[in-house]
Image (tube, rainbow, N blue to C red):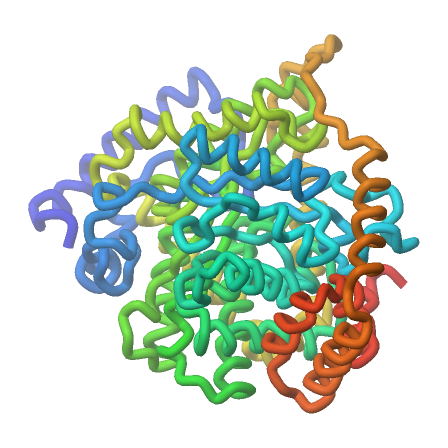
Length: 560
């Protein structure tokens, strides 16, 4: 136990004395609020003490880093052995524009790459398609063919740096381009490392960039897991993402529970559909969490996530390799916490959120830029965001020791509470038949919707505060530089795509698309055929159109 028997015996008397003093003080001066709670509305007591963690056992529930249940982290030396990866999210305009931003960030000390794609690319459409007009390069980089991708990774040594790609419905295609680019660079697939987000369940729950129905969408995810397990052993073929669930308005507990239950669904599918042993692929699963503004709630969420996942993998799936029990995750500071009003306040918000992620033990981190409510980050703003991470790593001392908040009455109690509430959600979804069944019933969607509505009501009533929005607001607006992506990018991208279509071997393209279609119909793995297709310069949309033709297109019931 954490405390000696003598301390525990003295605690009730000491607490009673303190409570008497509190009553006297509150009688003279009332608390500022009647009820205190986290951003997610978990009620917070005035103080926490030994009685709040009296049932905890150190060895069973906390332990040491690198030991089950991994509450305190996967690595035995924490950040002393290696800092988290500084992985700034970047994507803008053309592949050339984004490549230049990547090289700028690497020069400034970034240690991993991360790619944002524009909306047409995310949805599986080529530049110039009627669905895509006016969106080229606006919210990320436009990628139509392998030639764009080769420009994106120009002078990037794919065997020496890891790359994350935030892509979902067309994840198999963008990953095929990465594999093809590595081959062209002369880098074996066994040497490349990185992550594709590739998490379709959270798209149906929250982000809503979907293409095919849930069943075949999960099948394509399992295809990538199988291919990576066999041929690309250093690649994380899925980043099971709570980030967008939180951005859609969920609570921290909902983000925790729905993300982990999505992970369970993927593991189930790979085992049943592909027949793989869990220990052959589980070590390459990764996660992606939001770090919101409530400092302690976020730290506790991340600690609880590791303990839940290690238990799931060991006890539910009977994984034997300790690496399968690890939860490895990337974190991004909360976009939904940023404000258009008084945007320089966002620097402070990002710093607090990044510090929470570090104290929560993240393996990789993106820090949002102050201007992201207004536009894609300017070079100056993104440099400040990167420097925020570097200051935390180099100056604050937070990397000096592992899990420094362990043993805090409040932190351990809140961690336990969040874990308990997350398990309740997981068990409820299990009873529904799994996450796909729950999505078809609209369960996680409605839970998030209700949580978002409740939080907005609290903001409107002033029960929750956003500085500069519903408190300390000013009439004068701060002017900040804004990055603009003009129409030139779209025109040049369409010309580039047409040039590729004119020069490629159309018969080879048709043959490779037919191979993908046959693989889809037969339930075979699409990845080898996708790699061949992109090498033949088939476009992103051409391959996605095959998926749409064979599997059908999904329409969100809430939108119709």
